[in-house]
Image (cartoon, rainbow, N blue to C red):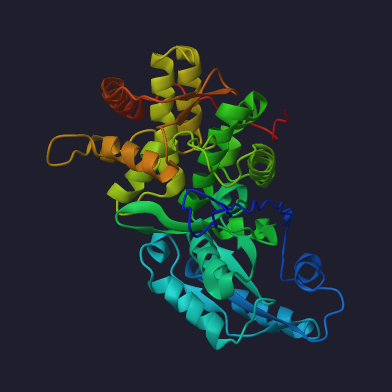
Length: 414
């Protein structure tokens, strides 16, 4: 008698076919000037491929603030493509989108972006070039990642914040359901090209906002970088080219090192080590209706978390004072009225924001704190009595910042 039972007859039996494969990622982050000058080879080297048999189709999407600040830009783009017409083809007239968070606040612009790609008949071997601030890059990157299940993406960040942080990473997204970046993808560009010339026409708040991200990463990763920022506050506020270029490149290097070597570039765990000061910043942006820039919100978040770190003996009072003074001396805020906003039950809105931050990460609440300037640690519980004390402390610091630490002369190297 044959007692063998088939898989169909015995539901306890399982068949598992394991699958594992590795994917290598590579993209350059370049720093240059005058990207659409036909003598500048960076962009054409990025777009042209070996043994191509016809011009490669390209779609360009641009932040409208960028076109207003640089009225010759669209003409420069047209002339550049005409010069390189044997290798690349501008498949559709450049698509201009609103700048700032409004471009991320609904699906409408994603639909418009994907419709433009479809109308251009671009295929998976084509390229989307996204030019603008971090918000435009986020929306365009999301659009590129879902069209044809992903077409190649080149980012040209044009703000300080985008060049040293938002435009060089692996994330894309839009805001939904009252939450920042609730919808998004991890999708890598084939290149990021930073053109310093675009910084010269930025309004001051957009220029200086990105410096907050430099403070963020310096405080938890690089004491020497913090000293550089602290000593060059006056020059950064004066928009000194050498000071801002070194700030951007050092900040970008630290971010890229984390992406490449942290072991978790796609944030599968419960921690985002580079989001110091961000749990409150994201909520402040939403509460302000995005009238507060991301960099300014991060600056306030850094100040609040620095107070919290002092109360937990993670930094000294002298270090707290140095952080607050440096932010103020750069022209960045350390307090906002939105810190005091409450919901109908009297609960601080930023406390609600902390839970939204946890949900966005998943798993256990984890937030980064400095452990001395230049080192980091992680915490898992937030004491909102201390947060309230910090809000009051920062309001006073905002109104009475004390003596400014001013620096003069050339950029001080570290």
